[in-house]
Image 1 (cartoon, rainbow, N blue to C red):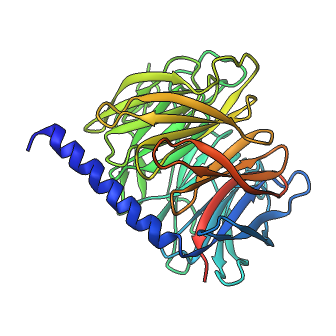
Image 2 (cartoon, rainbow, N blue to C red):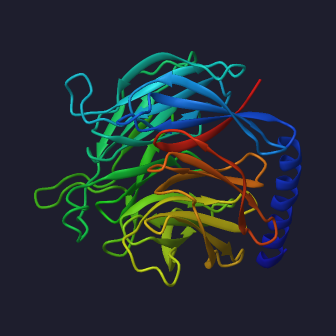
Length: 394
């Protein structure tokens, strides 16, 4: 079977699986947890009951009081929720915190289990490794990444591995004054960990020992050279990589540039990434200041979405399944200011946007043929929303 036919079969299989999963998910109820900044009226993590069939959001109130829970994730069993506490001082250390909670999926309430240091100031992203035994943390101001073991009861242990990102800084003296880790996730086979560093204009790729939770560098420090990550995907100077998304088959990596509001497409050649396209996410007639914030690939693999803060829009891209390249097909208004985060619901039929500065969540339907977004339902209010995740309700 030639490569073209294999690609066609893979696309058809993904479409079929997406349809089946969407039909099953549409019958379910979910909890939408909302991470926030608590510098204003917010107290922590808020919750909504989400009806997948109708898209209706029912407010459930404050799920847990905690400081600046700016990014959230849950475990595979959906029994525990974890949040970074994006601060620069944790118990006298130059660090933020990471909090673990047990979830009551009937009431949505969260009970804090414990909290540990993130081992770097202002943690801004959290994800699990593929085994589900370790949490990976990106510390923005600290420029470090850390690995925290998770016990079976959901409690966190202190970091077993901490690495300081290093390399040549980008040209923007204000934003790229130091390494700034902004996103971190494990590779599909758990052999590597990818880190988007805004200050370095790189997606660093660390070796990862999934048995011990240890990150390592391939090249040690020498007299005339600082240590570097194993290898990396390099971006154009001044891009400011923020978040990363992958195609469903892992063949393409999409890197969102915060500072220039672009997506850089990389082809994956056995974990060696080759840049094949760079495309703007902005409307052609936009000329103001803008920073990009979030990127996601639709479960069908046919569409990519990003958010623009300044233009206050969601960019819609179509994906060429063979080449992985993107075409900008439109921008829709976010109906709020500073769309920092968005998520696609478990059915793949709706996209929800968190507008940080106007304190509202806006819902869109997704056209399954074109990927176009259409605003639906009622906006809901929550102070300073910056992260949205779904978990199944009971």
